[in-house]
Image (cartoon, rainbow over all chains, first blue to last red; front, side, top):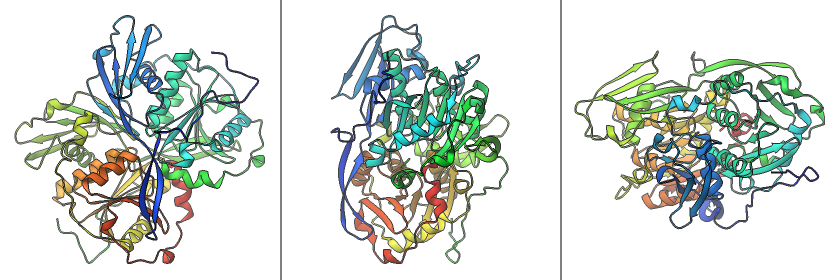
Length: 294
Length: 294
């Protein structure tokens, strides 16, 4: 899909005002005063691959088709060879069915299970690493000026994260431009929705940067690598295995991005330091306050 | 198990210095300077119930026996009726086997799957709500002075959260006393480890408060209710379904605890406002900085 280089516009951006993503809830605060607050929704979405029920994801509920396709691809239950003939979503049943031209050999891979907020892949451990052997990510360069521009742009874009918190955001970026910004109660859903969009629009990952508000765990690194994206950046921290896998597959892993600060624990050779950190303004106070909603 | 009322000492507290919980990793920071940082470990732990492999959890690796027992109980695969005859952990194989006097009827409930960091229950959606029907939590009172004392005590206790970040903490509390403070890369593991400790020590939840650094999602609320704990507090935010379930089962749900601030979206009738919020000191800056590691 052609990305419009002439504009920095998001192709998909959060729509905090969209009905159904949040619910107004009344409670009391520390002073005893009644407070009416906006809280993010969390709904079950059951994903079918052809006639086989695969998983029930707990999701905020937007972009169910992208979530289903992206989940199945990141589970390696759908490959480039599989031809998707249809993706049908039923809002009442909260079911989405992905249909392929021929039965894939993966329907039997999983049995029925729930994937709840913040939850990750339900497949066997062996499968988690599947497809990483021999995977090589392109030697793309990453300009620190782009990283700073992306962080500032994303942190100042209206989002449910800023409005309601308790949600994760993941953004597919190209150079200094954020392209697709997905949010979900499960950070893995946000990544899967991006994978689904990439598959649906035939967008490759080789020249992209993936930015997330969530932690850089083994699974986030594996999903990013399987999406063919050579750079994963986050405002959050690392796990040791996430770093180890990134180093194995040659993925550039950047964490703890706050204002001018960041830490690169893998693939630093891709960094092109074309920005003076001292010139980067501090983060907006709202971001710092929102921090622990993750 | 008798809790020593004469002391406020933790029965179990984090041990950030314990070997094997973190790994020193070398990277470069925003200035290009080499940095050696401490990163939390993330390891697979495969849990067996008798001869049946149930799940592979991604965990920091401490208290595998508590994690296994607590996971199985929170999955309702182990009940009070099941007699545990042994819990065997093999460090090399990263396997823990929970043995019961008689085969339970739950071994067949799950097939092999992985539970990764931040990941939640792998059972079917229907099962998630199982056991909540007819559940009534005790009408315990919650003193706001206790909530403030707990938050201050927990936030100033040395932990991996403060040292390395990218980890969740969950604390079983009684009145103003934090009793058991568990940390894990998966916040659900931290809760399960507490459930395992409660089961192993025959400690009831009716007079307890559960404090977590993580979000108040449907699953956190369900686990807390199944543990018989009437109060769940967090420094993070809410999801709408989490609030809805808490209201259904009569659980007191308190979120966004920062300094003197908090928000109660369910069960406010349990609150006893015996503390002047104005007397509560602001949070330590380290906590605010650590916020987004979740």
